[in-house]
Length: 254
Image 1 (tube, rainbow, N blue to C red):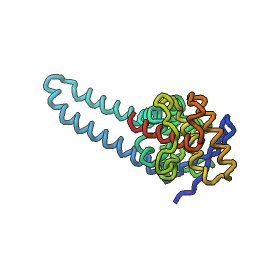
Image 2: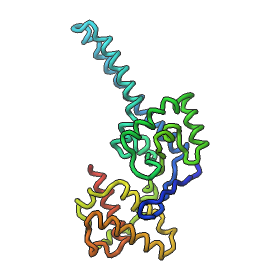
Image 3: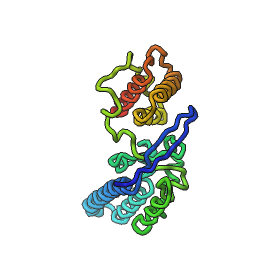
Image 4: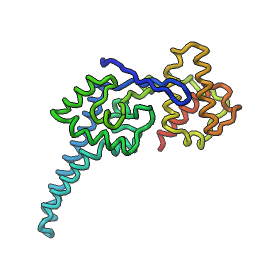
């Protein structure tokens, strides 16, 4: 069981967020899955080109050379683009990271940008030296479990908070007085969703008064920005639960 380090961030609303930092175990699992996917893609392409090349060679003399060049280009794109592209379009995740329930975020807690995704993966060429021993050493000695690419890009890999399961987050059924509109849900940012889930994860550890005040502060901040009437958020915790539930449901069907 890997030790759980925490990344603590104070939001502009003066609410502390705690993110469990991913260690060598979960990151190694994610890398194994992603590497396997890359390997399978390369093998499939090689087999496909091997079967196709003889037929093309009958009509195109240099077909073999062009097919070889295409395979090399694909391998180059897989190595340099696979991680960055997925992390940009999957909000900090690759298939391996999604399987391991971890995600890349910035040191300030917001989702990573295209520049940050490219920067952290550009250094993968260094981190991957000696079968990723260089990256593993960097993760082991850094307090935030960052490899060299993370240090350069200002990113951190954290565990997803929903690992606890939906039953931990929500009551058995929706208790919000009214359901937030689809427009309000789609207008929510990933950072606001992370803020809500962090509170839901930590609320049972907070003193009652602090818990109520924190819920009210978050609900008011997000409710005002999403133009949700105060009458629809009379119970801050129920309102936040419903926002989180609807955001998750909406994300499943994108």
